Image 1 (cartoon, rainbow, N blue to C red):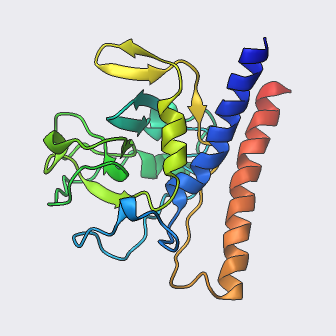
Image 2 (tube, rainbow, N blue to C red):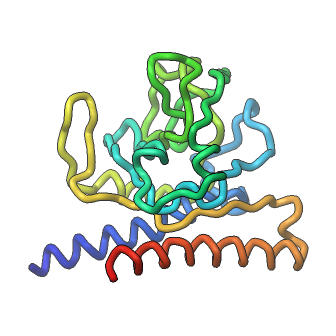
Length: 210
């Protein structure tokens, strides 16, 4: 029982840290392990606000990838009309010369190179066989400790996928722009976005467990 409580605490800790990991946009103080790639621009990744709330990491393959599910199938909370419209979109294969190394964020897709939608992977190791085949859209600037915690989770194999035994859920997501968030007004907007995002998850949880 004590071991089970410890494991539950680790899951909660990872879920809380994921918010910082997947939305971190500032390179200040970032580990030199994730040094800037000259092929990656200065623009920061923007997640569709709220779409990833209650989604999860369905795949955690140590030394390879931690992959987030497509929001249409992986999200627990219902989506509004706008979120559904965004989730149904796919993107063309925007492949580049950026290498798939630990910390890189890369879109998931099916065999069709233009089938990427909302599933993406965080590289847990170097995977040169993915280079030029999947669309890289960013990199982790902080949070390698969270990646290491993910890699320590118990897993099982289903077909080609190595999957966590417990559901690793994303509690909340938000975005910010480092070029404007220094202003007090923009900081206020950022706080409101985060509050609204967290409130959505809480409303859904109360409805489900009432």
